[in-house]
Image 1: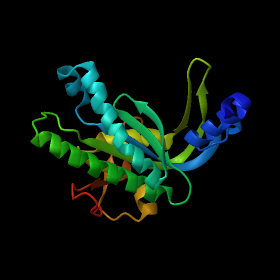
Image 2 (image 1 turned 30 degrees about the horizontal axis):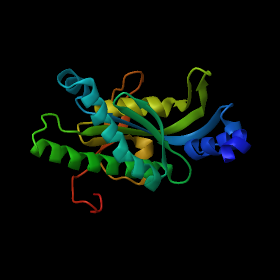
Image 3 (image 1 turned 30 degrees about the vertical axis):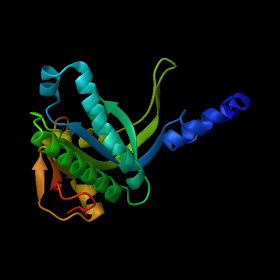
Image 4 (image 1 turned 135 degrees about the horizontal axis):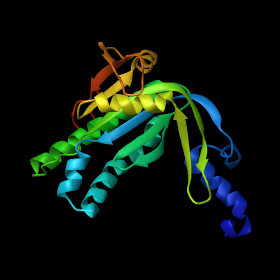
Length: 217
């Protein structure tokens, strides 16, 4: 009924609910320092070659569904699903800490799931790897009436994707600035990332499997 009486208002409410931005903001870019997150399923290509398309779709969907409650818990917003990859970001106060906490909890969740699947005979498991980086991005609508996306473009998005490629299965690699801002201890490493002229420093963090409800390491 509300949609029929005020279709514009209904659309604005839906937009604000799922993007965190007023509809009027989507038509223009917005600069903001955020922490970008890039998560990717390990062994996707091999899985696709061995399983049917529907089986692969169901498997990847199950990964993203596990992330849903974590989005709300850590106030992280998903931006894109790129095949078996997830692009998300944390904004606002303590965004570095919240992004890392989200990534670690998602890793722990998927490590447990992968262990169960392996024990029950799944030859692939279901581990992911994650890259996290902080920086200035421009966020806004991109596309046309045929296909419209609300996403962020910036150096941190690219760095998060490249750091993810350096991670081992079940592991998080975060940029030095992100780790420092979040107060994360550990030994820094240097990475020669594709598309970056200079070596970048980052911190590896492997989430433990633990028990359901157990605090993360």
